[in-house]
Image 1 (tube, rainbow, N blue to C red):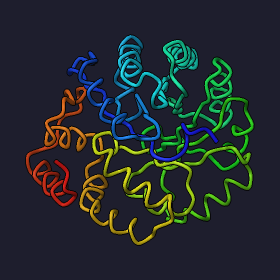
Image 2 (image 1 turned 120 degrees about the vertical axis):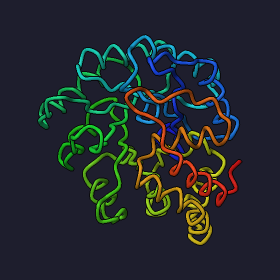
Image 3 (image 1 turned 120 degrees about the horizontal axis):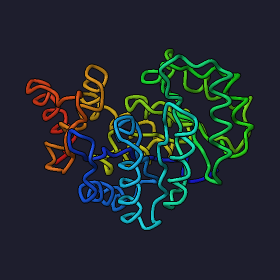
Image 4 (image 1 turned 180 degrees about the vertical axis):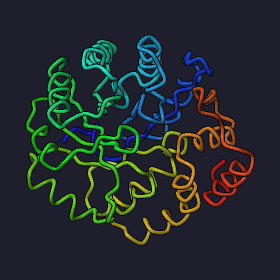
Length: 298
């Protein structure tokens, strides 16, 4: 199973101005922190990386800046979600030419997609490059939910090797993992996003934690990941408890706006949210500061 889709995958913000012009020097600073921390992979241009707000040229600038910093030391997975299949293919080929290690594809849509349309989209994009592709199952932003049958079908497609899952509504990680693994190849990697589910999903045997918070707090996220991967339930629970105030804020306010607040608190060059998204209010920022104090983050 490729290292790209196991362990801790850190998703940084993409620093940009309100018009969507990427600050490549600032992005390099954020990526360098992740490389130095030793994350297992970097997820560039995910939802936290504001891919949906950036045009093709700016995405290309972001990939080039990240590749310059990583220098192949840490695998780079690049988000290529786009409304049209042809656009996603162009983005996939751009990422391959730039030296990316893998692709992350969300079923971005305006008109709701059918299972057949989503399947055709994924087959076309997966066949456009030699890079391994991870399915991005994020119904909260795409309004598309992958059925178990569709996941099983796509897992047999050459090049599709992993899936980034949302947290199960019933918190039955072990049951969901067993169900999906029964119908997918042994080498198909199943990981989770939704940071407050990191501890239970990894302890249940999830292959990867696709982490928002690791984009700015990689050392703390790595401690949680390694404890869970080692099966140390007590240490995992203790670290997760320290994260609990931040998880509560993520649930209440969404993680994107809070990442800008975290970056500001840590004096990191995170840029500005893409308009019409705005920074969180002062009251929320104050609670973010308290949550970071609980973690000892500075």
